[in-house]
Image 1 (cartoon, rainbow, N blue to C red):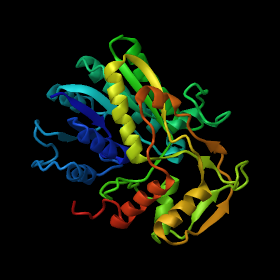
Image 2 (cartoon, rainbow, N blue to C red):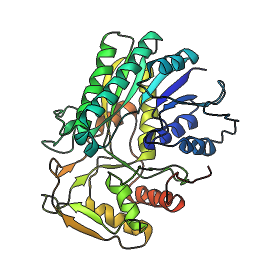
Image 3 (spheres, rainbow, N blue to C red):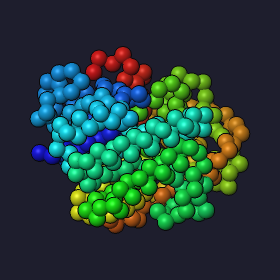
Image 4 (cartoon, rainbow, N blue to C red):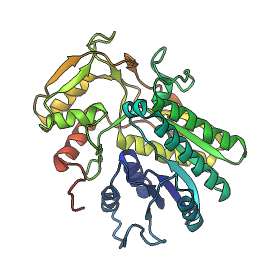
Length: 354
């Protein structure tokens, strides 16, 4: 059986998508350098999906439903060997540096890693006749939007190096597809993934101080940090705090399966927003998490951050009509599952036996 290659499959969104792929009957080869992820996430994916194979060391048997290779996409030789070893049907490409603040501090590292990794991947796809790729993009490509909800036709104008790498990395597979009419690309622009698998076995495990709102709120709720900083309460929104489109990571994973099925039937390139189409403010997120954990979450208002938009949420009409996909979970389920993960894994995957 042909396999789906999943780059960055041990990460937050990657591990949930691996779970969704296996539950939908796919066999997968995961490539991850583990720089911002954990091998234990994939061990837990196996538990969720009832895969009891003896995995051996870093790579499970060739006939496994889930094969893992610790590999960096910048290592062209190692990547070529993986493509030569398996019959790859399609690729889902998550692997990238992803912290906005860090990208401002280390722009060249972000351009080198994200662009060159994508180029190397597409080169191997071309050499081995792999014609289908789902690319993990981001709503950061829209920058500060003129209006909401944001449709795929909105202007693309990034405000940080991370966003620009996503913008440029969208163009690489787009041109890759333009060079061969048999190739097919889905560009998935996600909004704000949160939550965790309902089992509590896999979830978001950021290294160091979290860059995103919800993991930080979780750690405050768990008593690891004293308070949440809210950057600005003078936006033109109902409660003055910024509004974003938060999407359950399980819904997001389902969107990748839908996109994979779509590119199996269509050629060319299409971009899709993956969001709920609803916006929640920072204060609403804190209140929803207080409801989930049953305790108050202290916060303080600080200055706005430069480049932050007042609000941003998706027009998800295209994904609904063409992919047949729509988010199933609301903010209460997102916070419930995130808190369940936090309670069961207070230190993430660190020190976990499995």
